[in-house]
Amino acid sequence: RLALRSFVLPALLVLVALLAVLNVANTAQLVRTDYTLVEHTKAQYAANHMDFAADLRKPVSVTTHGDQQSITNLARYDFDTMATASAAISPASSGHEARKYFGFLLYPAIFVLLGLWMSTSPRRHHLEKAILVRAGTARTVAARQLALLVCAAAIVAVTLLADVLARAVAHASIASQLPLDVFRPLTPPAPQNPWAQWGVILLVVLFFGWGGMAVGSFAGVFVIPCIVFLAYDYVIPLLAAHDPRNWFAVLGHSVFSYDTGFALTEPIPLGVPIALMAVVTVTASLGAVGYLGIRIRNPLAT
Image 1 (cartoon, one colour):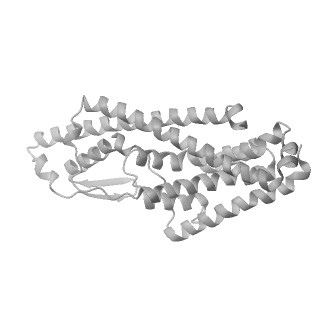
Image 2: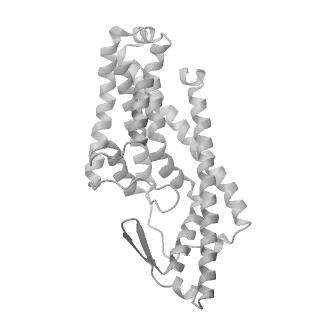
């Protein structure tokens, strides 16, 4: 009720909806850019009396030397890039595209800040003591953790709804101008496991949401932990293989393909089972730490 009445949850729902639309607009622009590149490559092939269609049947090779890329068979490379972008703008790709973008770029910050707010807002409004007296420490923390999951479900649902509607509009607009049906993948795309993807997203919600709650229960303030986390998440590069951000980078690359638009940072090499075990263990620990933190803060509650 506090999240609704204070307009924190409605503001987050509006925010993720707007960001979903902006992400789709960026994807639509990428489709147009990739189509222009394909047409330019076709013109170059024609000018040099080369067979564009024949090269589409040949494999492509990309080698990287430092910051330089060497591409053989540019026709196939540009066609595959356009085919991938064309598939990404389709409403059928909405769930996959939204999860891989929001799950690692925006949800960590959103849920850390939401967890921080949930554990510090009652103190700021002088409600903390009354809540703890009426409900007790354990019940209070359990209620906050459950409330976080309910808010997360609403945020994810609005994200997906806004994304699929935006892709439907963008796809219809682009399809009326460009021959998207021509650009079908020449090789079968890698299989996706939506259950594994949803499992990783759930870990993102719990890890960062409960982490925010745990920090807030000890710190008792919102602004300083908020600034520290945003700097850590968006400014500081990966520090080591067991940096929590690297764990999620490993898991993200194991269940999502980053071949268009947003590209998740390349992880420091670490086994997927090790990263998964580390995330699950720390998530459970953060959930438990919240109960300890509120017991320590209880005498200081106002």
